[in-house]
Image (cartoon, rainbow, N blue to C red; front, side, top):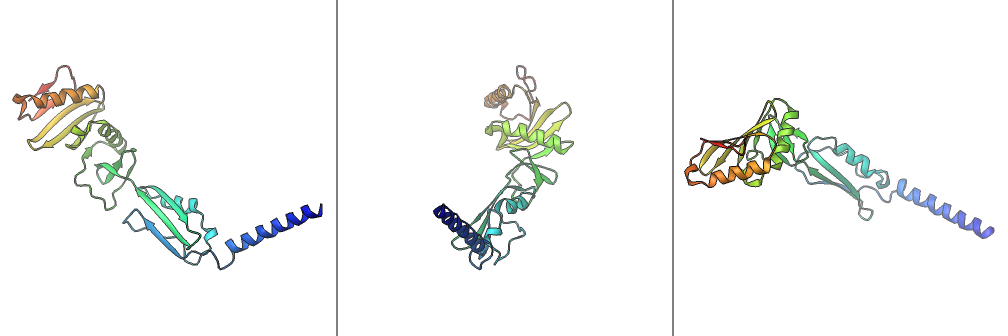
Length: 213
């Protein structure tokens, strides 16, 4: 019984000592804070000299994830040198709608210094419609999507694309987002025909009866 009490007392003392060292002593304090993964200015809520044990990574990370352009934030503490590292992953835009960017997950966010001049623009009546258009755009074969400069979302959930290439610009009327694989094949097959070298309009909304002009 005495041995058990002694072991319990030693364990309790070790726990209290550890808690004091981590939470109250001058050891294990924040020596530096670094933010990686972004060039955007972000506030730092952690202070040098703060007790490292009192820095809660999930709480700190959640503060950064409130920014709409931040996809994720990971906070880590180095118990050896006292450095706190904050790694930010920015959302990657795939298209632009007015002053908003849209990423592959269908999230809209304010553009923050990213290069967007090469991204396709979406023309739609609302943000929700633009997100639907972005989802459609993401499913297109890269041979088509890489050349899209403007994607128009029309009533009836129909799509029209302005495509540019070394041969000039072309209007591609897609219609509704259905039979997309067949429409893509029909469109690409039409481009391979010598007589279609200078097309200005292609309508594959009815893929079994495409129209070219």
